[in-house]
Amino acid sequence: MKLTVLGSGTAVPDLQRNSAGYLLEANENRFLIDFGYGNLHQLLRLGVTYHDIDRIFFTHHHPDHMCDLIPFLFASKYPLDPRTRNLQIVAGTGFAEYYGRMEKAFNHWLTPESYQVQIIEMDAETFEFDGLEVTSGRVQHIEMSRGFRFTYKGKSIVFSGDTDICEGIVNLARGADLLVLECSTPDDMKVEKHLTPQLCGKIAQEAGCKTLLLSHFYPPCHMDAVRVSCSQNYSGQLILAEDLTVIDL
Ligand SMILES: [Zn+2]
Ligand SMILES: [Zn+2]
Image 1 (tube, helix red, strand yellow):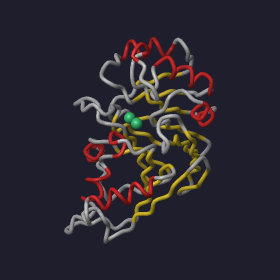
Image 2 (tube, rainbow, N blue to C red; image 1 turned 90 degrees about the vertical axis):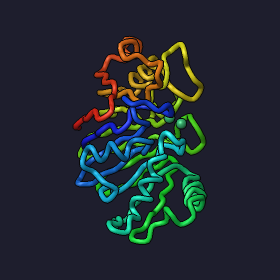
Image 3 (cartoon, rainbow, N blue to C red; image 1 turned 60 degrees about the vertical axis):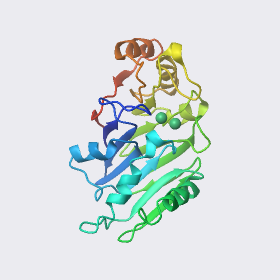
Image 4 (cartoon, rainbow, N blue to C red; image 1 turned 180 degrees about the vertical axis):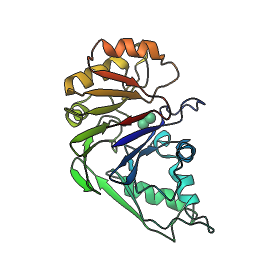
């Protein structure tokens, strides 16, 4: 599996860090995990267009995690070059209803004609997608929030989405080769239902993850301090995400 960070940022627009999103390539498939603003342009930098994505997983429907779905769907209707590949969208319970309302708000401008969108809701369960085993688990952020664990050829990557420290993310991340955690603010600026460097370290250590990738940094996060603080609780390999960081597993 190959992971590319499309956005290591958050709700606050930032020229260095686009909002949350990741490209996961495995078994000749391209998946997105979240699709925050700026991600569609990041994909273009990698030579990936709206034709090339097979499936999108949403950890939840906050704008910084899903807003580029709107220009993606609109571009896919471009009459001179319409998307033809069907698209699956996978998210927590309640997403289908939300998606229906969003589509309606744009009248017919997002509704596909040349391909089909299928919404798949996951609670806490395991499905197989194109040879990858995908397990979802509830995490503590909003009702719809799900973390996802992808396993392929004996390797596993786990994405927390936004979450606070909770059993759900520790269980989902148990023994993972790579754990991608949100790290919103420094320890002394903790925001409810989000993580800080020390809490990230605690989760990764408890779950026994080989490598920890921290991402989703709000502006007050300074990388040196994040590394020091997280390492107090975590002894494995620690990587701090930047936009377009690539990790091969
Ligand atoms: Zn967020
Ligand atoms: Zn959120």
